[in-house]
Amino acid sequence: MAGNTRVFIVDDSGYMRQVIRKHLENKGYEIIGEAQDGLEAIQKYQELKPDITTMDISMKKVGGIEATKKIKAIDPNARIIIVSALGESRFIKEAIQAGAHDFIIKPFAEERLISSIANALKS
Image (cartoon, rainbow, N blue to C red; front, side, top):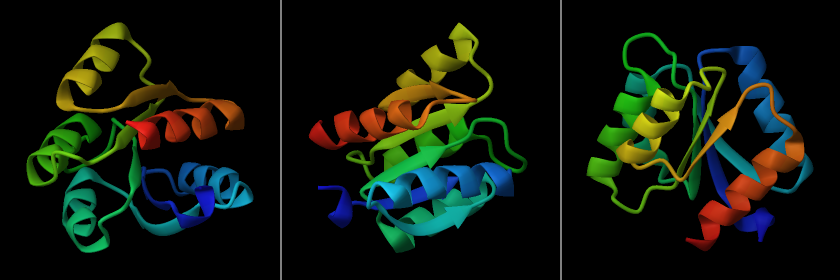
């Protein structure tokens, strides 16, 4: 299943994008694009049409929660997983209300990311 899954990574940290990419490519996921802020994410999402998107919260221009809302407005079936160091309950609640499938707190174990993606793909 992973081999056919197209993933879009959104994070303002190049290092974190690289970490997520490595974890997912090791499991056979195809990384089809990256963005470093929410504005770029919204624009690229429409072009790339990924199966799943990982989204940071704290980014310049447009934050991850706002970007999630805008992407869900464009594509109500978008599967978005928030991956953020901001693990406070209000952020988690906002992310889920915005339409995110899951919320992963950085730093995270590879297994947590993989299981979250698998669960989102089932829904």
